Amino acid sequence: MATLATRFTTAVAVTAGLVTLAAPVAGATPVASGPTTCATDGVCVLSSTASPSLNMSNNAKLAVAGNVVVSSSANPAADVEGSANVTAAAIGVVGVARSGNAGTYNPTPLVSTGAVNPFASSTAPTTSGGTVANGVANGGSVTLSPGTYTSLGAQNGARLTLNPGVYVVTSSFFNTGGSTITGSGVTIVLQGTATVSLSNGTSTTLTNASNGFVLYYASGAAGSLTVSGSSAVNLTGAIYAPQSAANIQSNLDLTGPLVVNTLTIGSGAGVDVLAGWEAPLPGAGITGFFALAGGATLGLGMLSMLGRRRRVAA
Image 1 (cartoon, rainbow, N blue to C red):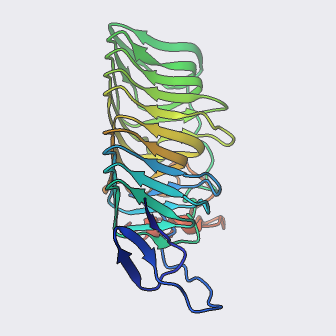
Image 2 (image 1 turned 180 degrees about the horizontal axis):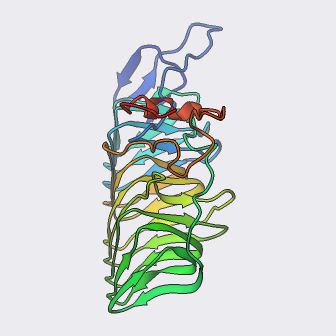
């Protein structure tokens, strides 16, 4: 079992597959030099105590254009086993990063003070539509419009198209049974214990609304996020699930940041977090973390995002 002891950022020593950091000078304070932001194309795993909060096994892959930041102080905080691999611009871990059985990190993790939640001051997008008891496509082709749904999804080979806008879900957003869900300009807002489950040979392709989010778990929402069963998921937009456990057992391609409480990537599954998403401009439906004329506070986690814009309106 190889252990990447990420508590000190002094010289790295490698002995017989055991990767540790050289002992610090007596009385020295550990220096945190690892990343703290997942910006526009990174992964933030926010749990401060879960062990491990990033868990990968059996050829699982996490390929990230930006940074991976793991906030747990546990031992291990991150565990990459069985030829699993994490590749990112930089990797920061508060606690201990462990690897074993040919599991690898690229580059070597550095100690971090923890992830800055880029959307901590955001408010959930709201829908312009009415309340709909059920939005389930059960076979055939169905088109739905924004609104509040108990359940929203597709099953039995259905083809569900979502018109542009915000969909509020109170129980479950799902895709199962070889079905297909597509939508452009869409945000799914999960409330309470609502879950996301994309499974059983399905295809889900969504791009975000102008607010920048494709999946947004509202304040207090802690329902799970699951991708499984040889499903193909291609999403453009931020996934914001700060209190939720993400369990990825198939393939997820995401153009945008991934912010979750814990992250598990299982046997043979692959998560690609790609560059190309941009933070929305002020007035796009998100409040609380842009520098607005009224004096609203600019969230620290958004500084690097806004730096990538050519112009930010006052």
